[in-house]
Length: 347
Image 1 (tube, rainbow, N blue to C red):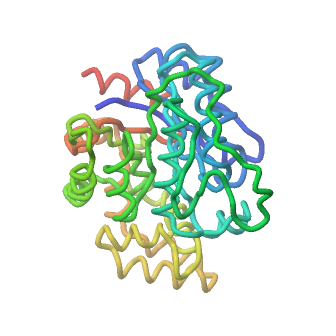
Image 2 (image 1 turned 180 degrees about the horizontal axis):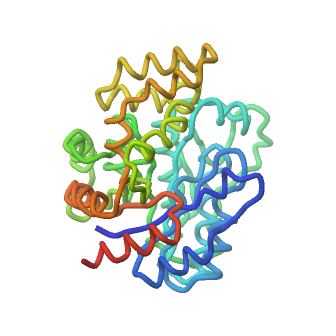
Image 3 (image 1 turned 180 degrees about the vertical axis):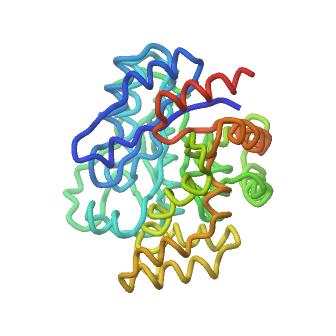
């Protein structure tokens, strides 16, 4: 299992890239560094900055929001970074995001996410391949566009850039249909934060196998990257460490998205904590945030994180390493965490 790390600069009032930590991770053998976006800093600009100031660590978006740009623009950004940073370093991770961001921030229709992802990946692959001018007959992203407001002058085009035809495209997904889709059409699956946890792997592996069985290239789980994400917190007081993460869980399970469509709550339900998820949302939406935090089960937090004293982290890391992941990303790790995990990975 390869180690990687994510940055959280997209959540800061001003972008802050932890370059010293990233460079140390690269020196210790970390395989990849990943950026993301919500409604702050974008993923590609930050990644290009990191790529220019590092040497070999792979560069990924986890995730780039599909609604923020056309598939062609996503392909252009990924190709440009890969060409300038060194061919073979770039991984394009895509996801749809949630309806609140898609419609409220980007002004795009929510549409049908599964079909939109399928269309986007097909377009992006054809752009990378440069075999012919790109067209798409898919229902969500027709290309050229001929719908309402069209001039009728659009024509199929072929990328000017001659770059990496095999630049990998990963899909970030949590719902069953899109996990299957990742297995069917993508080069890898980004599990997202707090979805893949040790003990739950068979549920997701079955979905991926269903998708992989529909491919023409005979790709199997053995050569299909599965990228998990966790946070590491070195702390002698396990109780304090658990409690420190409950506000985050309550915020997203209670208030992330709409009451009727909250992927974070759905994930908690899927992991077997349905009663707690309903209670957290009820309390949070009623304005009782502290009570919502207190309702977050210790077990739910502990399953998805590596926290506590160093020896506890070392033992629990084995569960992640043996769970079937090919890559484990550490969320915004400190220098202390990078040093610890870099040594554990080579132990």
